[in-house]
Image (cartoon, rainbow, N blue to C red):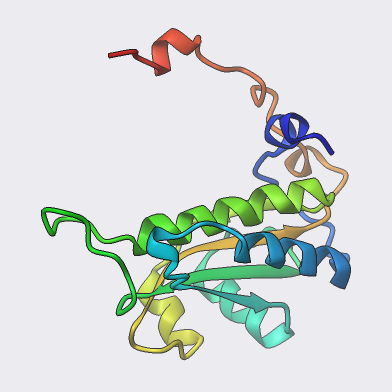
Length: 172
């Protein structure tokens, strides 16, 4: 798929049909996340693949937003391995994990796997439920799967509606 098609066609799928994600597709998605750039190439991200019944049950405890996805990626980062920017106000962890997550979303769309970025959950509870290391911070969950053939499994009607670029971009 052309990159312009990927960015135009990606949407937040809100209903999955539950069929498994092929290993080859999942491997391609994870490889794209691994290639994402990070500050000073620290690669502090950690992606957890949740697809077992027990793991998905835990996701359902965390959020009502799994939407029947058969795979959920949990993206976290190591808080002890981040770059601190000048002024000591910002660290690279959240931004780097977000870049990784964006690569995962776009790669999923590229291989025909619908996805939905989730932030509607308590990251501390996620960390506890999955027994993640103390030094990791959870940034997001990513539902992966095949869209159900219902309106919730398709883009919203206003998906292609965008503000004029002069309302969102300013040249200084």
